[in-house]
Image 1 (cartoon, rainbow, N blue to C red):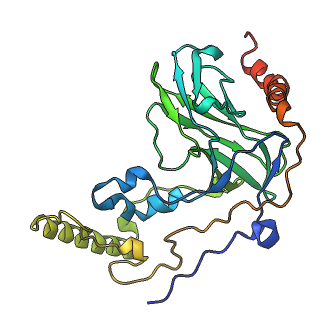
Image 2: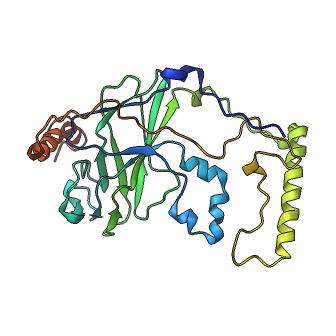
Image 3: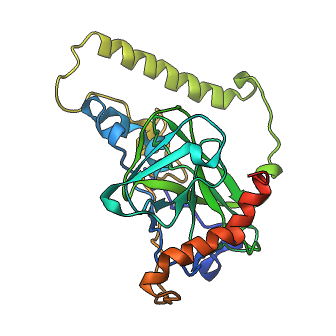
Length: 297
């Protein structure tokens, strides 16, 4: 069976051009950015860890870089639109420089303390961490043209349960960064057809569904194991079809590089000035955002 070849980078982002740069914006601290991990606690907790067999889930878990929360806190929303309808309680007496109620309406906002640069023609999708549900909050997504924009952006979560105390832990992922080539989605010409219109594909699909039905029927006749791995077919995980054909390209995990510290931090503020520096930002450019969206307040 031929070995699957690793996918090639798009021509627009070859070699030294395939670079994401996170420029520090002068805060007295940063939010850490790391490659997204494959594991999820809820997947590990499934019986015999069966959720970890879903390769599309595990690869999606790793498909980007995650920004980590800097300190643990509890947040509660009264259900009203005002900024002060969100109440924060920070643990250990340490307040984050980055999280606040900036827009009201139950939206918790993290200021991302970087200005990002991507290769020409690439956007940066800022979204919630993949396959990591959180009861009581939903991450809002934004697509930013980071090859030219000179503005920073925020990550926002919409609280969905009134009066529900919600915990955000230290080092919990609060944002996932995924580069996307601009206009690539728009080049596709979507179609709907009957599978019978492609006899060769139809035959291979029928072979898979027949084998699947036979496998399920056989397993129903057996007692499921109490411990250890349950039987499964695993064609997709191996990158093969039921007939033994190999995928031309197949990934079982992603190996994203971490962000390299190319330059030491410039300490623009003395430690005692950190709070005033952060407050100054709120009254500056990001304060202007508040006035834009919430001018009456």
